Length: 309
Length: 290
Image (cartoon, rainbow over all chains, first blue to last red; front, side, top):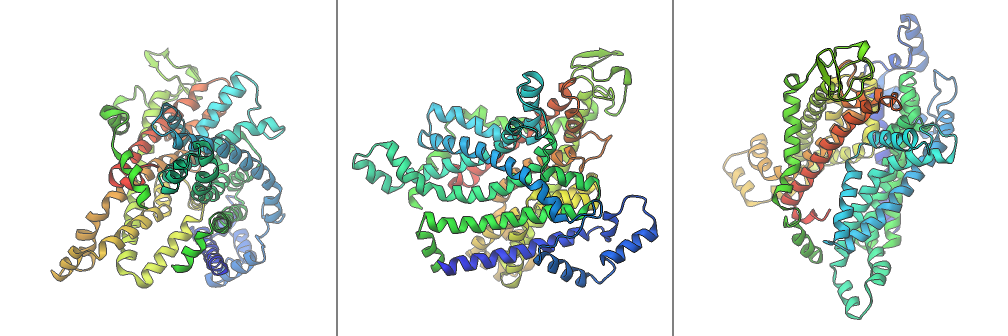
C-alpha cells in the first residue's frame, strides 16, 4: 500500500516538474518573454530596462533554475500590470471558479450517474434508446453554443434567469448546466460501460440465482464495483471543468479564473496566465493522485495488483 | 476479462438503427466537406462585403436583389456566406492540425515501442506530462505567446495534441513488434525507417484512424473555441467561433448571428463523433460498449 502510493507520488512530482518545464518553454517560445509583458509600442529602452529587472537577460539555465525555485516557494511573481502579487490576484477569483465547478459537477454527476446506471441496466430497451441521444447531444454541444442557447431561452425569451454576472445564486444555474453538460455525457457513458461489464460477471449471476432482486444487486454490489472507472474519470473531469471554465465564464461574464485568463491575455499580464496554467495542471496531477488513493479504499485488490507488477 | 467479452461482442453487431442510419454521420460529414470546398461557388455574396443599411436583418430578408437566407450580421454582411466560408476555415484548421499531430504522435509512439530503452522512457514520460496540462489552456497560452492566426493555430494544435496518438501507437507497436512477420522482414534485410513504415505502420493504422477521427471533432471545437475567445482566426476572415463571439453581444436583438453558426458547429462535431464511435466499434470490438 505505502509503496504503491509512494511510487504514484513520485510520478506526480515528475509530472509537475515536466509541466513547469513545458510552461517555461512556451513562455520563451516567442524568443523574448519581456515583449509579452510590456504594452505594445513601449520604447526600446523601457523594454531593455524591464528585461534586466526581470532577469530575462540572464542565461536560460539560470532563468529556469530561478523559475523552479520560485515555484517551490509558491512564488508566482508580481503582476506588472496590477502591481500586486499574482497569487493574490488568482486567490481573489478562485472562489468563483470553484463555485462554478461545483455547480457543474453537481449537474454532471446528478444527471450522468443515474442515466449511466439506468441505460446500463436496461440495455436495449426503450429507456436506453431515449436517453442515449441526450448523452450524445450533451457530448457534441460546444459549451459556448449551449451557453448562448440557454441565455436566449432563459434570459432573453423567458426572462427567468440573469444572462450574466455573479450577483445572485440564480446566476449560477446556466453556467453550471453549460459547463456540466459535457462531463455529464462522459459520466453517463463510463458508468454505463462499467455497469454493463459488471452485470455480465459471474458473481451477479450467482446472487441472482440465490433469488436476490435486481435492484439490491445493482445498488449494493454492481455500483461499488463499477465505481472505479467512474472515480478515475471524476478526477480528470474536475480538472477539465476548471479548464472548460475559460469559455463558459467568457460566455456568461462569470468573474472566475477563466475570465481572468482571457483578461490577462488581453492586458498582456502573462505572469497571471502562466500561474493559471500551472494551477490547473497541478490540480489535475493532484486529483489523479487522489483518485489513485481512493481506488485502494474502494477496491483493496488494486494494491495487490500494483505490487505484483 | 472473459466475462466482459460476451456482452461486448453482442453489442458490436450493428443491429439497432439499420444500415441507412449507420451511413448518416459519414454522409453529413461529406456534405460539410463538399460545402467547405465549394464555399466560394455556393455563397450568395462576398462574405466580407459590408452593407451598413442592411445591418442585423433577420433570416429571409431580401435587399438589393439578394435574399439573405440566414440574415445579416452587425456590419450587414450576409450570414449564410460567412457560415459557408467559416466551414472552410474550421475544417481546414482541424484537418491540418490532425495531420501534424497524428504524424508526430504516431512516429514518436512507434519509436518508443520499437526502440525501447531510453527513447521509450523519454517519450512516454513526455506523453504523461503533456496529458496533465489541460489541452485548452495549453492551446490558449501558446497561441497567446505566438500570436493568433491560421498558421499559428495549426502549429499550436498540431504540436500540443500528439500524445493521444503516441499512446495508441506505442501500445500497438509493442504488440506488433514481437510478431514473426517483423522478424521475417528484419531477416529479409529491412531495417529502421523501412521496417517501421512498411511493416509496422500498416498493422497499427486502424486504431490510429479512430483516434484521428475523434481528435478531428475536438480540433473543430478547439478552433471554434479559440476563435470565440478572440485567440484564433482573426476578423475579417469568417470563423464560426468568431462569428458567435460577436453574435453573443446581439443576442437580444439578432438571435441568428450566434445560434446558426453554432448549429453548424454542433452538427459537424456530432457527425464526427458518431463516425468515430462507429469506427471504434468496427476496429476495436472490445471497447464497443463505450
